[in-house]
Amino acid sequence: MDDRFEQGRHFLKSNWHEVKETPSDQSKGFPMPLQEAPPETDDSVVVLPKVEDPCAAGQGTSGTPSAVLLAMLKTRQSRRNFEVASLSLSQLSYLLWACEGVRENRGKYSFRTVPSGDARHPLDLYVFARRIEGLKPGLYRYLPIEHSLVLERDGDDSPALDEALMKQQRNSSCVFMWAAVPYRSEWRYGKAADKLVALDAGHSCQNLYLACEALGLGTCAVGAYDQKKLDAYLGLDGEDMFALYVAPVGKPNTAAGELN
Image (tube, rainbow, N blue to C red; front, side, top):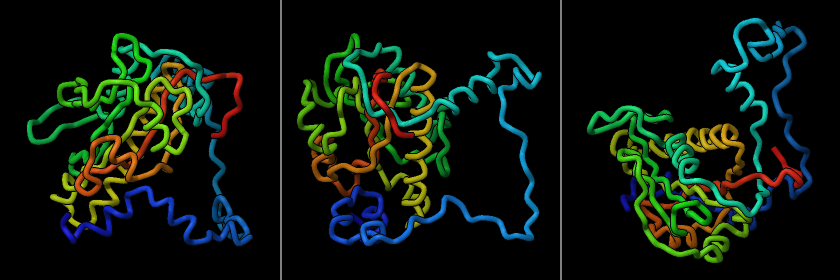
């Protein structure tokens, strides 16, 4: 690994062992910070109109894109509890395209469903297909240019993945895993690239949330995992490519309570 980028790449990894090594202010009993900075007494505050369905406001119909998006944003939440159920291959295709799908390929770069600094897209998207109709269980890598899946390893090795995820796989039908390929952005932005890599992961995962809402599915973003074990599970070297973000996907168990 190029020494210039070592610190930035370390920042992107799941360094949860450091939480145990360095006590947090919460563990020391310090007060929780406020959700927002309150305005000063002499500040001018503008109260915005209530966000409503455009149909109710007389600005459109319930089927308009704005109304559909509003409904999905209102119901979006992290869903950790899933039924033991299968997803269709068409549903998986929809979710993958929502995360990293190509709208226009320009050869050396592409415009996708998510923004990326200078269209570098420094992420590879893997999916562990556990229960997908018409797809044998295994680890796959998404090829956004071709909108295809390449089989990296077949077989249901859920126990190994669940160990790497620190028991957060649960009953999910599949697990989305983003791997950082930082040099795609470092080539253009140097040491500033790590911030953009992290932002790109957030863009992609939020699209997954909204796509799941559209299909009546659920997901939950996971940032706490065993870095070395998940890198090994994905077959990554942990330096030029490493695990960055995870999201199990499945049919929500509506009987279980959830947190946003």
